[in-house]
Image (cartoon, rainbow, N blue to C red; front, side, top):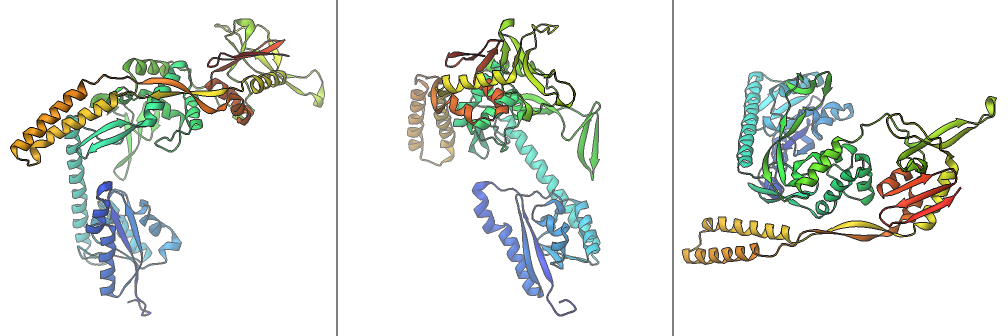
Length: 507
């Protein structure tokens, strides 16, 4: 009891490392956060204390410092929470932390803020005379963490050596199989969009254009957002041609550490937050979503892509930026917005904007073609609104039966491997083995139907999409949808490869 006769107020520091989904309900009953909370409540009742809150850090590693944990951290750092309790209780030392120096920090923090610490299992209290025991139990928790890490690494190495899947799946795949027999399997979204991502890269689309196309199509990425760099990561990953490779880390020139942990790495003159790496040997084989030749050509296109230029002011971007060409130069010379002041003098000078031929070749000599920007934009807008009231067609992959055949063969192989461990009578086991082998032969002899691609209507027209697209985004929209425009001093022409429509308007 406190001097004023009121019971002491305590919070429970409950923590649980990551648990497999199929074991979460069982773990809560046996040794989860709920049981830690229950033991703390029993201790509080016996001591005459009051539990004011239980910080439930589920899926948090013991190597995460207490002040960085999502639940416990605010109670250690925010003044309005610190004043609400008198001490912190945990079931075991490793529920607080598995790092020796974190426990030292926590005891120093308790002294500074006049708080108490108590560990139920080991009967440790602070302030107290058992500082040496805190060090002993802290070292034991740290050693347990290292043993767990070593065991997991050894287990993962064995699984990789056996060709099993270790780690999370990339976009377009999901994990299938048991805990020690996991494998990658394509998703419907992977079958539909991954081949198109590679095709668009080969066709010359930029990473930003592909990311924008995926956002407009409503495809859900792993990270929640389609970043430009995500496209490059997908293109470079050999997993999409059926080979999941280990990542070989490049040794840095220098490593900066804080509290014994690396925080950044130096390569040459550049400091980065994460070590650089390259793809190493194949450690797992899966069903490919593109063939090896497509993967190679997409990576060649990614490597030959024009390097990023300076900052682009998206708000002031011309409507036909990136899709307008000069017909007087053979149709391959780009036309860019050009600013030219009016002939008026003084403050009344009005800026005039044109599309001007950039020219082609090493010298980029312009042919002199320069057309008023407003007239060209108005003509292109009228053409698309009036002539492209046609349905938008999208490519859809029609899966064949190859993936189903491979999946069924894998199921039969697994069943054959499991027969000996089921404890069946010999005659029953022999019968099932004969039936499985016969089915294996029938499935393997099935005629393989490859995947096919067909164009299906999206349900909207190009003119509808054009009308909803902001003016400064219409140029990238035209590029993504296969439009190209030409402007001379007398007319504007818009062509569309997918529909074959070519329309012209006079200026």
